[in-house]
Image (tube, rainbow over all chains, first blue to last red; front, side, top):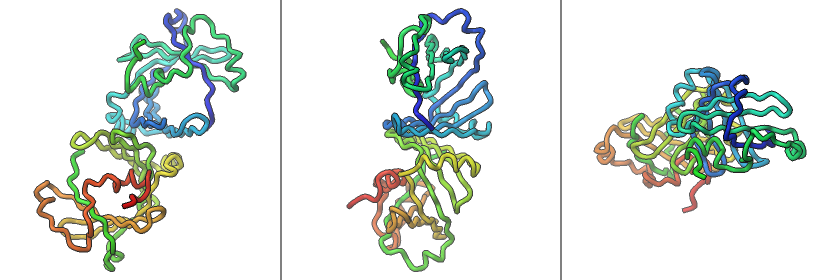
Length: 156
Length: 156
């Protein structure tokens, strides 16, 4: 349980080499999204390993707990996420810092978002993003996965 | 998954014989309570059997799914319900209809609520409540458990 320091970008033209990176298919859906920032999320990776994640609070007070689910538990809960799902393939671009690139499909096809995490605010400021990362989305709540799941792609 | 037809009462003076009824201790807490009626609830009965319940939607569209949790899963999630918990002892008053009487403790000590479920709206209207049930609370959302957990006892 800690504060994540991360920067986020929208990639308009994914580089050719992205498809060669290691990747995993992610299905996630929301059981609840509340106004004060709390959320209860289901996620399944590569169609098997399933987790339930609960987030509560905002900013530095944010708590996050994740538990593994059996396939049976996941299957019982998944129908309740209908209308609030995202599917994407997450690619790991190895380097310093590691960059994760999510290529969305389904309703959000066409959206490609990169995220990178830093150990400190200083390190985050020092990062000089390469051109292929495109425009910065850091702090734009419309691109939070729970918002994408509930409201779809922002019109801008 | 169906619509529950039930009536609810606030018992001001619990009858002496209540303590002789079969009962179970219930701890429940909310992981999320959202404005559109959805909730994600943890419940543990007699300190062992644990379930996660997700409700979504309102009225006739309301979906409800419950899964059993292992003790380990329950223990990991329970801290996130802090500040949104109720503890109560549920008594079964056998008869036709069966009446369940919840005697709250902790923050809600002093509150005693009876609920009874009916197979049809007609049966619900035909039910002539005995005096000990006290004032009717049916339809008073302030006495919903999620509201009691989040806001405490209504001041009326």
